Image 1 (cartoon, rainbow, N blue to C red):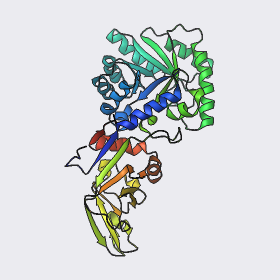
Image 2 (image 1 turned 45 degrees about the vertical axis):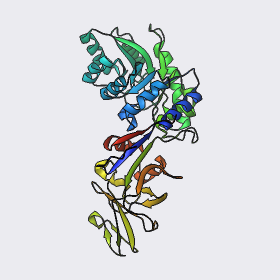
Image 3 (image 1 turned 90 degrees about the horizontal axis):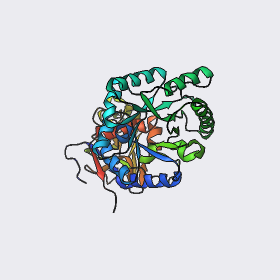
Length: 375
């Protein structure tokens, strides 16, 4: 792999890891459940152009997208299967989605009228999936727990401009009990909504990675796998492999005496003589200031703590305990180096939120390179 000469850091995507994850998840699900692989947000920062060909190679027939850009990249990669949008789309997005054959996520009765109007103007029928609020996310699903809501859903399903392919929902929590309860409610409510409605074959789906891998009863006809593709889950007890590595190099090292202040606003004061290494990345590259004083990196297989307030294009780590550390040494900010790794859990704890909040940005802001699958 060629290192970008002008970049302060870069992202490596391990294609072997993604291929392994697809095979492992497929084996866990069995052949009765359809596997929708989700590549929203540029494949969670991993690069839709990198991921989509692997999905096609492994026989994935449905890909989940959020935007027209996602869809365009998937089609440009040669994927000819189904595209399912995983959120409600605005009017212009729906119109643009027709050329890609996107199946739209219908987020309520008013949204259904917007999608139907686009279909009428274009003289087409748009394939769609009706979202229910059975799991209690209360984001875009129809509330069908009472007869009035069920009647509204049936009117939407009867719209001649919409060809309904599915009934769907989305879980708000990665908790087994919550998923079990939500699955039972979705099963009951989706059946009630479909009673007496003439449609073609309807796919029922509500499970994403955690639910699909931990609660089999949540799978229904199709599951939407996002985080699992990229190894950002422990739902299979470590069987999945993280696919992203974020890498930089030490730009400079200097020694400072005890009592020196470090960084903007004199944010940190050294309590001993210290060697500090400058890493040429910062919040402009997606390394949020929430990592200041909490995040760690790997240098020569050892952890080094971020000590200053992260700046726009740089931050400092304490390498006093790594005597051999030198400028140009590889620095791993996310992923493995030797037998050590900065994991999603590490990043989440340092950041105070989910790791995806950061690594999706890293993958889109930094130069990205694929590490080819072995064999």
